[in-house]
Amino acid sequence: MAHPTQLGFQDAASPVMEELLHFHDHALMIVFLISTLVLYIIVAMVSTKLTNKYILDSQEIEIVWTVLPAVILILIALPSLRILYLMDEINDPHLTIKAMGHQWYWSYEYTDYESLGFDSYMIPTQDLTPGQFRLLETDHRMVIPMESPIRVLVSAEDVLHSWAVPSLGVKMDAVPGRLNQTAFIASRPGVFYGQCSEICGANHSFMPIVVEAVPLTHFENWSTLMLEDA
Image (cartoon, rainbow, N blue to C red; front, side, top):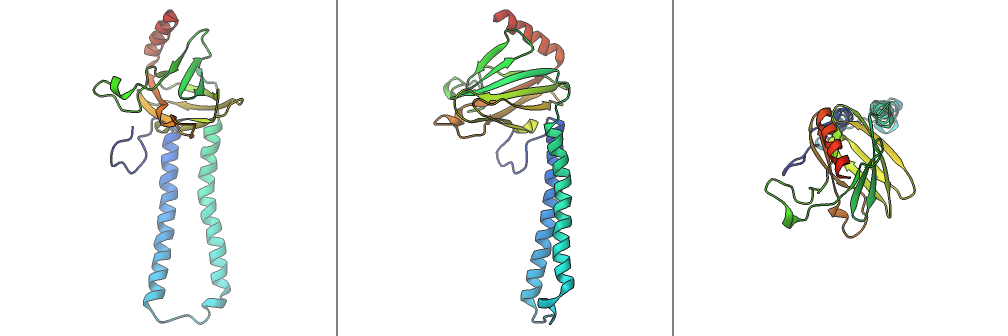
């Protein structure tokens, strides 16, 4: 999860997030090189009185500053499109979970089970135990098996919400009357925190998301206990 003074992204916990990190570094390097070149040209023009008399009517320069930006945009667009298709691809999910946004909590339904579902509310600050995170902990976590394709169906009961978990590279709008879907694979065990990422009212900041990735055997034990308590 994020920590104080952090400048970069959270550690990747899914293959898609790893791809997003690589693309971010790729795009940032291009921006850095362009900024350096522009700064050098500005400094050179300001610090010298010499001027090429053909600079205002040079066909070569016009060709360069037309073709070069097009090539740069292609270098940015191609990997971006690849990741967009990766994020949109859902092949044979092992588990499907429906996440419904409410003012101001989330409810989860494991559609592969008959009666496995629960509401997930933020734990108030006064009820936190040492080691828990303020405004991020919930009374029920969304538990998933690690290294398994997970499909999440996202919608809302009332107003616009957005289901987002940065470490997993997931962000999907929850729109009333519409069912959106996204998919991810948790590549390691852990607890991953997110929050509603669409302003949805007075308590928008108080509807966190907690995803816990566990080994498959632990998930089976957890689901059995939840079904027995239902």
